[in-house]
Amino acid sequence: MSGTGLRRRLSSFQIIILGFAGVILAGALILTLPIASQSRSWTSFGDALFTSTSAVCVTGLVVQDTATYWSAFGQGIILFLIQIGGIGVIAVALFIASISGKKLSLMQRSTLQDSISAQQIGGVTHLAVFAVRAVFLFELIGALVLLPSFCVEFGWAGIWMSFFHSISAFCNAGFDLMGSRTGQYSSLTGLAGNPGIVIPICFLIIIGGIGFLTWGDIREHKYHFKRYRMQSKVILVTSAVLIVLPMLWFFFGEYAGEPLKDRFCLSLFQATTPRTAGFNTSDLSALTGIGRMMVVFLMLVGGSPGSTAGGMKTTTLAVLFANATTVFRRRKNAQMFGRRIDDGTVKSASTILVLYLFLALLSASIISAVEGISLEKCIFETGSAIATVGLSLGLTPTLGTLSRIILMILMFFGRVGGLTLIYAAVSGRNAEVSKCPEEKIIVG
Image (cartoon, rainbow, N blue to C red; front, side):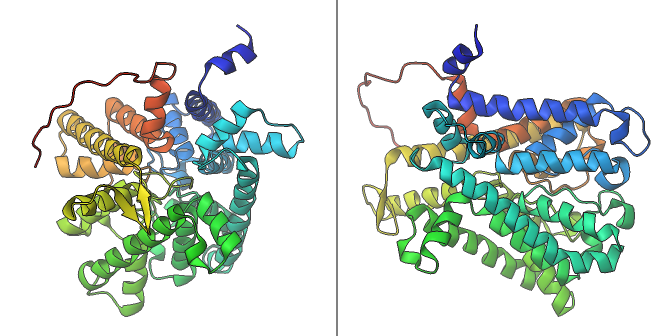
């Protein structure tokens, strides 16, 4: 079968999945090479595959400490995989094709639309070009802002550290290079009180997580909020609520005993990083039970559609909340910002919620049974994996092969998207053309 014939048979969802899988496999093979590790020894394919999956899926869960195990070459490959995964494999490929002067086909434009979660196919190429350029610009600005603080802390090595952490933060990846200074798997705990590093990373996480379409609205309409698309309004308002309210909880609850400056930095960071970023500035195991459950909730919600972040997405939570409000008020349709939400969107949101909760709980139960670890800790790890966050209670490096495979599947599911996988699996099947007889059932 010719390559053209194969492309015609594949749906855009299947192409997206194959694109991510291909980059993950290629990255894993490169990371097995002796040049990729500091010891100059071959890395097991299992460890390399897990690291590559975590990088491309911009998660941050690791089985080997990034700073102390991987060489400069290996860290560079991981950073490249993070960049590809953050922007989107298909978006990168079609961006390169676009700037080379090649005209994109309708199929390619459709694939690009699904890859970056664009609402319509018209203008999707220009949106992708704008998004990729904006990514590089924000990452460069972030690196320059971080540069003075990192150079003070690490000398000339701070230049590499600044760019690595800027890209990792903007792509919501959570990989860090702190292991050589503050201990393996320590993330940013040694820099918790440094506002010159903590606050810029928070802003990079937030900007990377609001999505390409929202950037476009902000660029086009500036401060005229009323002119934004409904989706952009929902994303900005929901994101603000999910940052401010948890921040207040952490400020007056979990970190009430800390000095004021540290208290503010810790609270802001802890409210921001669970939204799929994966860095941490404090010992997560020291949080109260309520604090850990709040982190799990924030992890599952994640970022926004068409962004570098994973999770169920802020719009999913907003649609579910709007639908619940509609039921309470006995309205016919869910509404937000004076606009009606169609029933198909509400069904998709409900399906995504069920998928994420079911897979996170089922996977946690399996890992708990296999590893003999408490279910609460396992839920934290599986929630982090499926939401592509990367926060951990320290379990991941100690897990066996089966548990690691489960986490890799969850990371892939979370980055590609549950509905994308389902649509890819059922692609080509006929849509429903008949209706069954209706009968009421009592719920609640």
